[in-house]
Length: 212
Image (cartoon, rainbow, N blue to C red; front, side, top):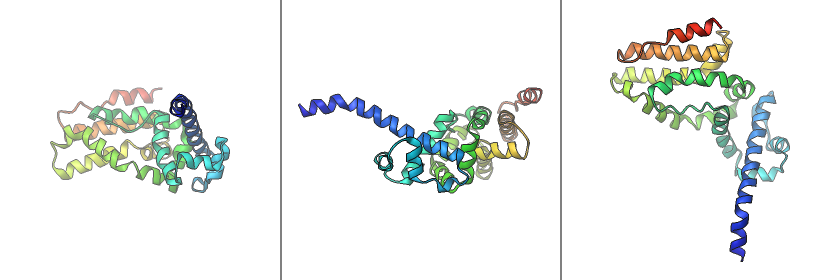
């Protein structure tokens, strides 16, 4: 029966579709690391890198914008450092855990930071990111005057970001691991200053990093 055949073939088609989608996203990742001008990466180049036809890309991503929207969460998942904190501790530990992983994908991370397409990808995540950070920091922010709470939340976004990773590496001369320790330490200091009930800043972890 036709219905039975479709049901039987469906898992295989689904697996093949997922593999093709992964190949397309991996091709864009590779090209962002290789290209001197990431904004000029064309669909034809992505198709060639992925080993598929151009029209195949549009079967999985209706537009270039849809492809880019899918890429940024995919890259975060690949790095294993998606900024999805659910507690104050998650925010504080975030840079310490994420920044060393950024080093392993440095070319793509820098391309994402400094290209128009990279900015577009990041802008698509802002609403969700703000909601996550506000929820994670709520135990502290709820105790502060609104103006102070906005400052603390904004600093958390800055310190737990790829931009902070890059600045600490380039201007501070730090490795990704050292940059992560520094940003997490700064978050501890800020939270300790505004919330006396918060744990003291983890100064020893920063000291240990310097002695390595």
